Length: 373
Image (cartoon, rainbow, N blue to C red; front, side, top):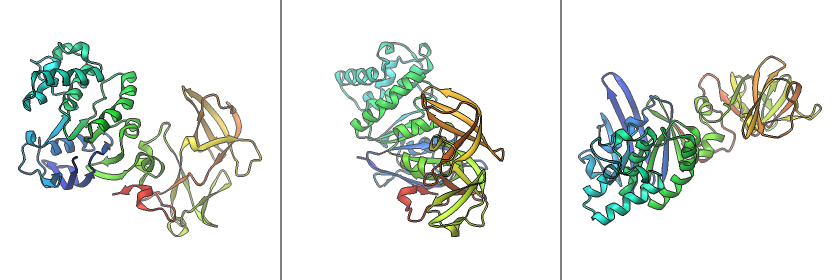
């Protein structure tokens, strides 16, 4: 079993700082997903761990050993690069087999190992093809198979499902966790797809501008994002963010939406009252209710869009603010005109508008909200 520690990593290219005093720990056998927008530094971080590039400052430790003087081939790492990095003169079988050949495995073990991962990744029918004859999806899976075939203790996967079709991507989200768990590897997995991050990660590290902004379980990141920018990255449709002015209330604070007072229990008044804030409402946490229901907010339905398993409604509050409401497909609700929605204040998020930081509820510890940078 293998652990990975990154200590105060700094990486610059000329005057541009790509990784800025970044620290991170990955536990033995854990799958940690690095998630963030393009340019956040995710791929650079993987190459640095692999030893392809060196940090300007900081240390990479694998099982507690500093890797500063250890060459890439001696770090015990398997890696699938975003740009495939396949040998053009070799067929798919030979590309996949390279880690086994480097470890001097027998011909039978090489054949067995390649056949196993190729079948899993559904490329066993193209093993005799060279990269130029493969589709981008087949190239991506060949690169992933090469990373997996030697059962390395540490796996670095750089967006390995980016170029596969939607059906296979969905299936691999189900298959990969089982495969990785069976191998017992410690995995760092890069993606820009929040659904993939939530499906594959034991924990997610959200990156932005070369820094880790928050680390937590998928549930912690989604339910308790540390910053507005993180809340926006997770969810489809995106979270509703509305300007509010919190006032003190019994057991917390309250805000007004369309003239209706909404209690937010557990939010400390000292942290929120007197500040410009944004309330964050996940579309699926809102519901259409009958007029006269306690706390019902009057709205006007402007549009309704069916999205397979759910239906999303765009509504306007009485003061003209747009709100998205999501419900399971087939759930009865008005399609247009006047309506009312209910807000569950216990699920609402409150952010300081100036800093973007979420205001935590009383009694909420770091484990519940994830580690915020």
